[in-house]
Amino acid sequence: KQEVTQIPAALSVPEGENLVLNCSFTDSAIYNLQWFRQDPGKGLTSLLLIQSSQREQTSGRLNASLDKSSGRSTLYIAASQPGDSATYLCAVDNNAGNMLTFGGGTRLMVKP
Amino acid sequence: NAGVTQTPKFQVLKTGQSMTLQCAQDMNHEYMSWYRQDPGMGLRLIHYSVGAGITDQGEVPNGYNVSRSTTEDFPLRLLSAAPSQTSVYFCASSYSNGVSGSEAFFGQGTRLTVV
Image (cartoon, rainbow over all chains, first blue to last red; front, side):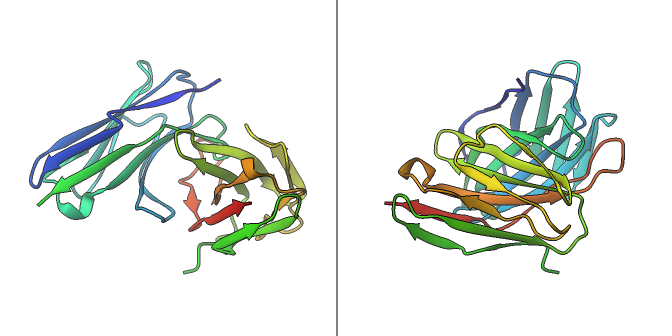
């Protein structure tokens, strides 16, 4: 059974700092890995999707990397802003679009 | 663009009542799924569908039924609500390119309280 772990569970940083969120998974036979953002009381917004054949994806200040063999992914946020405050979720897909297994999330607070 | 639409947004049920959570997507996605989100447990898969007429169970299917008669709709039915089903429910859709799958699009959630 796939298990996904996110470290740290919570993170508080001053504005402007670069930061890294970590995600690890136990079964490396994944089709893709996706990072989501969730604001309090809201749904999930997709940030980045990394296919199993890719090593990284970038969108603006966000960069996600994937190392399938070691079962790890990182989400790098450059020059953090208070608007980045949210919970970040990592999810792996073992069934080509069907069944996501989620980590517990990292709750990020960026202080002005 | 509507994307994935869930109704209702909030619902309070009494123990033993039944209800249907609605989910509709307008992206012609083959795959749809239901998750529940609980504090300390994260998001867990309840049921999923790979196309009209085809459904299967996820990690926590007990107490829930689904059917998929059209590509657009994937309702989740609670047969006899229990307090343990108090949760936030999310519907998601995605498509397959035959190789690696697409990003998943989520609805805004239904917050259900069973008293």
